Image (cartoon, rainbow, N blue to C red; front, side, top):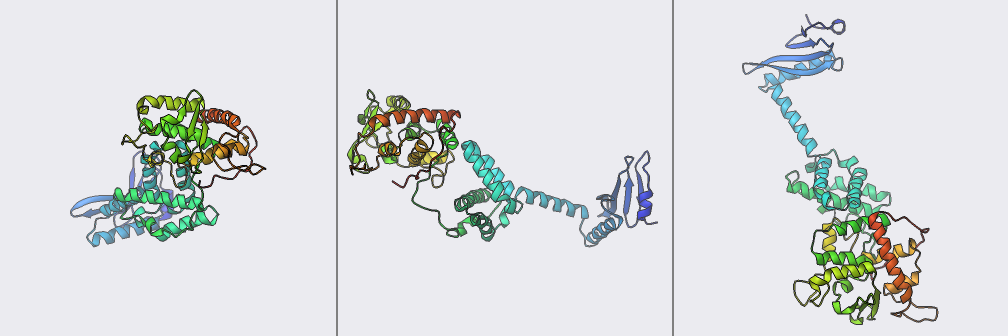
Length: 412
């Protein structure tokens, strides 16, 4: 006799599991614990098989019979309901493992160990906040360029244009990883070139937040490249000269007794000789490198005995550490870093900073740049700056003065 809801509700558990038949192979299994489980028994290719349809009352009598009828239709068509269910379960599992979020997190786990922690945190937070909520559950191989454009335009709409570009760039990296690992056929972000308004130009990418500077300095200390390139990375923030001026530095230009670096006029952008006071930390870096390249002309010697290291070496090293040199930090960015923090955090007079940057600064009388002007103040500033960077690297420095507005370094 078929089951009824009233009869099912009245069933009581016994010391052993007991079956209560409905019809056409469907029955209810009542466990000693009191749980009531739907089962469907059938034969396929001469073998007896069993399928679970869930528990009562979550799956009611009507729903259980509908599941049974669907299974019987499959059997009649020559398909095994158990195998069909296994295939569907496998497809769901594959869809989950191949979702955009799953692939993105896998890509992140492979790449992030080589990045600075602050850089890694920014990327995963950007994905979690701006990308995963809309694309995360979708199979990565099925996402299209319009899907991505809708997502990044949502970021752009709130006024975060730079973040929208970075999110799109991260998506491109994830898609290329998906292509390499067989989860996608192509990278649809390539179809979106020019779809977003261009970023504002005129500035070199630079880190100017003290906490992020500390993370960058720690990443430089952990750099796994050559001593020459690492020394250039370490010296760059301490002297904040232009990348070409640093890369082409010659040993003959340094006077360790005076703790001074004299850059000849022909190598300066403004064609004016420039003095760079050297902090104790800067001298130590140079003296550590001297046994390796001291007999060569260039401090940062290249493979060719008569040439310095490649002009791409510093930026390539930054990228190896996980920094995007187009949007986060570049070798030229050490200048903006120093200019901003020296004034905003340490309260250094802007004219002193501008002279040390070798910018043409006119005084009230119209006198242009003087290579030795503010030299005493500049020497004190350079040592104070080096000490401050050491504290940032250790994570012990705090803001000492109220922030002030200061223009960011232009592309010179």
